[in-house]
Length: 184
Ligand SMILES: Cc1cc2nc3c(=O)[nH]c(=O)nc-3n(C[C@H](O)[C@H](O)[C@H](O)COP(=O)(O)O)c2cc1C
Image (cartoon, rainbow, N blue to C red; front, side, top):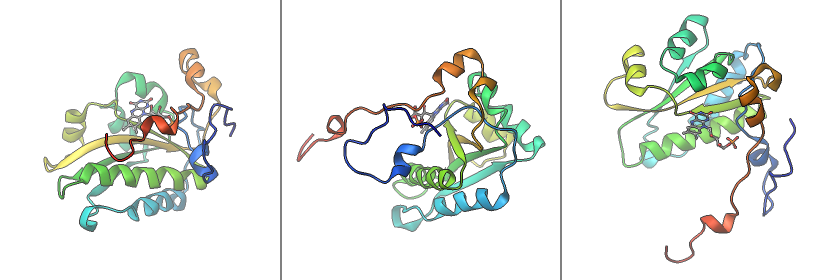
């Protein structure tokens, strides 16, 4: 995986944080179950408010299940994520004071472990949440967050010309621009 020069840490960190990014090109190759479950296992160990563990993961890895997911994913995402062998919807039970925060942390853990397992992830908020709720029979007391595409990274030439241009790791604003010391 080539990580461009624009992805340099201002302070020393483990390389995994820099190496993880969200490509759109996927190989037509199945994800072994142990690698999928290993990444979900990492998510399981995320911290959560009062250890409620509000996250739930809805997995689509058969053709039939993935097609059901494709039916509610926005066209701009569907064009590339149809190639992904696994799609996972991250949802949370609306319980405790921080179910969204907790589930985001779970995704972070998932994404890093997936990368350690030689896989790539791409989260998507661009899907019809009402339709997804209906199609997947998700009760009202769960909130839908993101569909995550999971698989082996593919060659960018498999993407549309427009997406090929965007198939590169992004940078970050300087750390100092996110920090307020003492008070906002
Ligand atoms: C909650 C969430 C929703 C996102 N939605 C989309 C999306 O609908 N389509 C897309 O292509 N990328 C989506 N992304 C990916 C972000 O654009 C990406 O993570 C960000 O640009 C940082 O790039 P990196 O993950 O490659 O480091 C989403 C990311 C998150 C965390």
